[in-house]
Image (cartoon, rainbow, N blue to C red; front, side):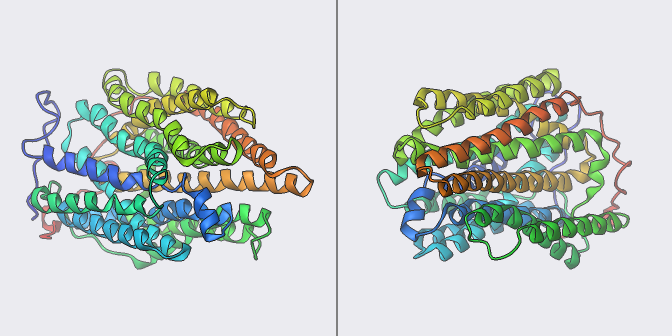
Length: 498
């Protein structure tokens, strides 16, 4: 049996964490922040890379979409990985992969190698958030989870939000490759500290590995996002195949994957246990996370393009303009977590979605004559709204599950978030490309055409977010989960000595 710290008693109010586990959680949070930062660090650099590598926006966006797509393919594996292997081994493997990808990206001589480095980075990043969430859900008492998940929300929402700022500051003074080379020493330090501090704080068990599930997962998620991303390429005349083919194939792959998981769940051997969706609270929260992630990542890639290609701002100014929203998210995340512990999700999620939807409607007013102060104000409003949504949704989703489903629930939330982020990025870029290409073909100048394309993308996002307000009204505090209702118990003899 693997040595593990016992879970704290439910009624404990003295401490949120068992003794000796605080350094582990701090290191996991800091490491996750570093790796998640890289999801959006490329957004400000895209216009420069488009010129240097002589590629289009629909090709360049794969540096972000490819990162998110890889995470979406790898994250479903983390339910199995976290159940089978100790926290220490998983952490060191994930950070080693990220370090390798960072080094390759920093030394990349061209677009193809840079994209390969980003994919390797994403393979390590994909494991970190489920690892962090599963560890916290196992260690933290229910009455303290809101505050702790508020801290995790800083990683999930603030790190991507300030990615453009970090890259803007670096690009104003150094080559683009320094976005990776500056991060590398921090990753190596995290590896060293992990080797010293991290010990196994959760129990592991022997779980059957199903290669077919891995193939179906990669096939389904990969083709779906690839198809969505190809819509923009088709509009600009770069696609060499009907874009509906990978989309339909991806959907069919996901249907097959889901059926396979439901069948394997009967013997407790699913790669990704979809019985978590039997919880209505979990299902509703995950649906809203899709909207929130798509809006966040879609806006994070479009705003830098708007600021640079339409308003003509440089990379440093663009990055600095994105900073206040990220800082605001970081400031309110612990507050939102504390409010969740006191009042539950409903009083937070509804106004949060209203503000976020209003901000996206505000972005539909952006054009060539937009004042900088208005862009910053609307971006602040979007981050404020999303900040009130992220923590309650994640905590409600995972808190509604039995403990034995935490690894799978974390993997599902992570997968859905990344697929939604990749899809949001792809769809926003595709809508922009379709509209701007159409107008350029009609004789409109490039700047005006780009502004119109961005307007169309934000309009679609605003409409979707408005419908999400209706769903937010149904969010309720999750009842205490029945530990034996969803998944069969695990006998001590099944524990792994890993």
